[in-house]
Image (cartoon, rainbow, N blue to C red; front, side, top):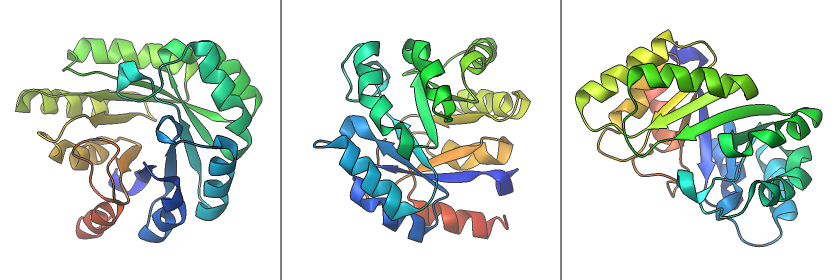
Length: 214
């Protein structure tokens, strides 16, 4: 399944958008909760520079980001940027704004990030809940033991597709490389500065795909 996997360059610096494409990324994620300045100008420029699909992400503080506002403030920031996005990452607390995103013709990545391991049966419940409003459920958990990684791999294999799974933290970073083998749609990488501990670089993952013959 690795051949279907797409490398996402998660950008802490939007100026790296063009570099991401040159390094081999299939998509870029613009983490607008990390950017300061005129977001419309920043996103428009990054989209023009990369020439590949863009994921727009305004990550809440509750799920590891730097956005501290209300759902209304969230959509107020996101909506003007929709013309330059192909996908929008939407946490469950912002799901009420999905109709506006769909009206703009954008696909929804329905995401949940957990700071701990989630039992296998709960992962399947979460997948169903996220798929209600999203095109691609994205479930990221924090394993504590090797057995947790095995459960996440099993879930990824058994879950409906498309699905995106990942891990937080550097302890089990090898799972980031393994999950695409079991059917995860996207793998989030960096172009120089990771947006999360344990991320591989885009260039490392391009090499990994070549080594594995994908």
